[in-house]
Image (cartoon, chains in turn red, blue):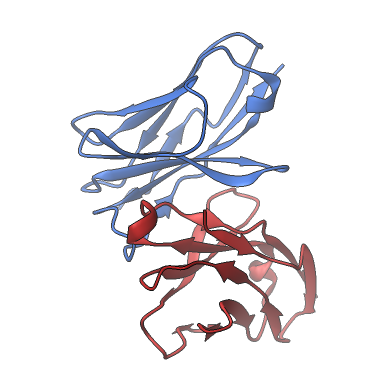
Length: 115
Length: 114
């Protein structure tokens, strides 16, 4: 089975500062997709950003960007200009058409934003 | 447009009972997946349905079952509830269910077994 590891259970950042959340994964597949999801207290998982493994260019969505290191199997999320609304649990996830298309999630990182 | 709707939002059941949870996907979405979220095991895949057919199943006992109707609405059923079944159950829908397509999640059903 694929494994996704988030080694930081908790992180904190000052408002307006930048924070990086780490994620590593293990797979022997060449065709896969990586995601970062945010889960606020409302419980709904919200897609933050997505990266296709075949693309070398790192994905960017406004204040959110990733550092995708395919050889190292690393997929970190950088949040710039952190806002109070960014406070949530962040989950890294992996999917591949060769492993049933299901999500494999990491254990999550709880992000606190300090005013 | 309306998002993924899960009902009920909260549920308390007694050990040994059975429970049915409902998920209404985004209109037009044909794929529905279910996940169990617990503090100890994290997020685990239960099953996926596409056009009324179960396409994939996670590593859960047979007490966990599901189905999908012709309007793409899905239900999951847990029989003979155990204390360990207490969890947040999340449903997610997708247009095609392909790996590169995004899934939209609902807000989940919080099941407590006492």
